[in-house]
Image (cartoon, rainbow, N blue to C red; front, side):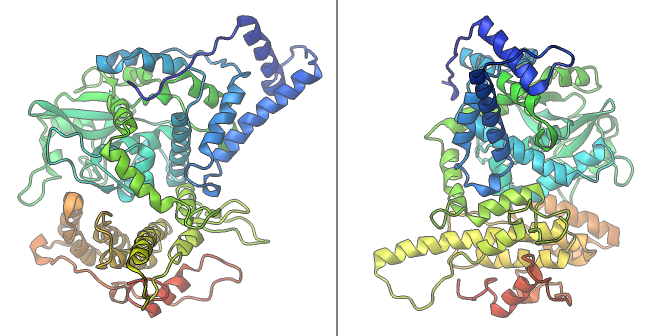
Length: 593
């Protein structure tokens, strides 16, 4: 059973025609056509109908003001009220590429759902996801000059912000399943999750990214995500976390280039470990196009057709048009619709799914810590995705990273999340109470760790690499504590520090941190280290892996700074200085350990 049953509501042609005329004149306007007066009750209905749509759209753009599930049900309800009288006018058709899905996925339930007019809770989560993808892609790519540069910026954001999770050791297992909004929210995922997020970010910038699979034994394996532009497919490896290098320094290879020049893929070889694919493997690749269920539906095309101004976002896709662009390109097979989004939705909708349980557990850190208040970690994450880092100061012009008036920026929200709950020293409590309090402390430590790490990511975006390094070290110290909960994954702060150090030009120290990376990200980190060592003309063996450091031992020195402006809530340097005085725990009272 697919997890999206629908109910069709019959509607007569005469009612549809009347509503269409009403909407055309009252909302869109019909040029020189005569205006037909409406009765008072019709005018009231039309105003209310527009209000329903405006309510839904405007609240989707204020996600930091509500908890994770606080507003979605109301948005869906308003859209259903709006849809009862605003009939779709777009010439929607079922995309023919659906026929390329496995037969088991081409159910009547799916086909009925694509043409259904009723919005479901799944649609609410989808709309939030699309808004987040749009917000991220806007601020990440705003200075890009062309499609390829835009794709490079979006891919770099993806791999920097989604740490690599391990693949299943049992090749017959499906592995951890996440939806794209969870991958960006949690900050980790598998290679397939990185590729999926990259394609959706690119879609919001009207770029076409396809999935390229190659045979490995008897199975097909995801190899690369490819940007389709100018008659070429440019390659980005989500596992290695880098664009596949082209024939000239700094260039991105195309599929045609790597299939005809064996040396290009060898650039990704590491000491004693060749790149897992060769030119022979990619002489013909299987091409898959992302077309999640809602992107193919009539109701999402309906919403997209009504969006204007800054509210615009991409909610619909025509995979068959992308397939036409790819068809005939060298080294490609006949494009098909990517089955993974459909499979992931089915797996994740299963109440007994371990992935669903794991995601639910991880979502707890975004829940309300104090009744009635939105968790600052959640609110900060929503603002971070929009590039709203600071709060606008009263009486001053809005800066490029200021949040809208009346909203706090990501930095003050993350700083607040670092001080939600502090461990009390010397407390004597009954055992049952102590266990409950300890669970609260553990959750607070996770929130504090994530807030610190994401403050570091913001500092990276602002080119403040010394501050970024400080926060990455603080995050590492928190999760290195003996009190860190065993069931919470640790972030690879060495990789983050390596990127910060490399960006600051401290390449030798960056190499040491890259060499200290273990786990799934070790390949990506080792490749970065190899490149820096080659640029320095040194053998990689001359470097030693970095050791874990305290904030006081950071390779950066705190820069001499001035006091923040009066009324400013962007006092991250002051916060960092206070933290360094407080103790190695990375928290203001030094007692959380």
